Length: 114
Length: 113
Figure 1 (spheres, rainbow over the protein chains, first blue to last red):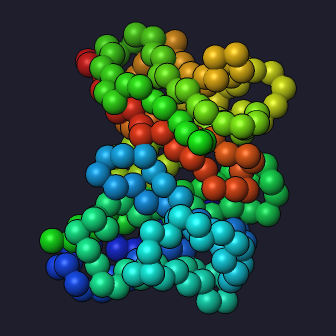
Figure 2: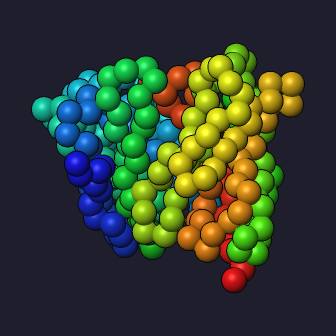
């Protein structure tokens, strides 16, 4: 069974540009999460989808970040326009439906904003 | 406020030596507790989790962790470290696995030959 995949693995962009990160969850996982790790600090929650609906987006830093999950399959996280402080590693995780089920994480996308 | 503290940023141990990585948490109720590991180029892999019951939890790769409510700790241990254990380790808490996880800042483990 394929794990959570993320694309691209690395992205380097200029300040003010737009970047779109993609996450493909494990097949059949209704729950999808985005997290971010900035500058070697703790990994912080961004938002949680259940199927195509946003269950919790309390961690989204500002309106420059837009997450979508059309059709309840893969998800995209767009940053527009990117700022220097957006640099970090963006992780995606997916989970089955049960409360005790594990969140499985992808390898992350390393975003560098110059 | 809910938080997780991993006081050691880096730890270096010799191969074959024992290991203990510390994790302290601040949480209003009894949380679900997790340890994840990230090897270079890999995603976060779940080592073990504690929900309830026996406070000593066994995980994959020979790791175990002990939940101590009185100390608000969930330290990770391994009796004999292998070179392949070199990675970054994250402790996390949540009300359950379905909710957002709160992570510590991670401990990077280096293994000396």
